[in-house]
Length: 70
Image (cartoon, rainbow, N blue to C red; front, side):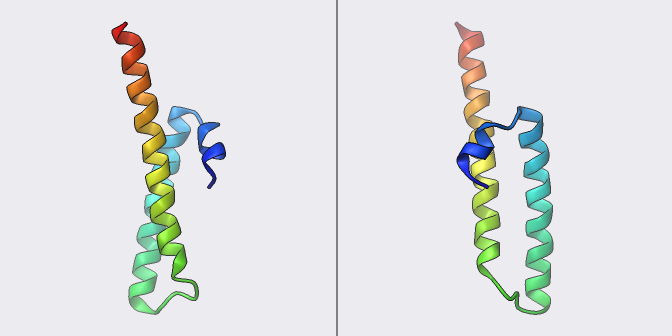
């Protein structure tokens, strides 16, 4: 998922996407533990996607907190 795509999501969509990505990552790790994945780079990509989503969510929460503090 690209950063531009992530910025277009609403806060609720971000939260649901984080849960989906984390679930997918967990199933990928389990599958990789049983038998090696054909493309193990997917594990790294999944972790990065979750981090991007969480970063955007945190940025929006801080931005909202700053606006309410003013």
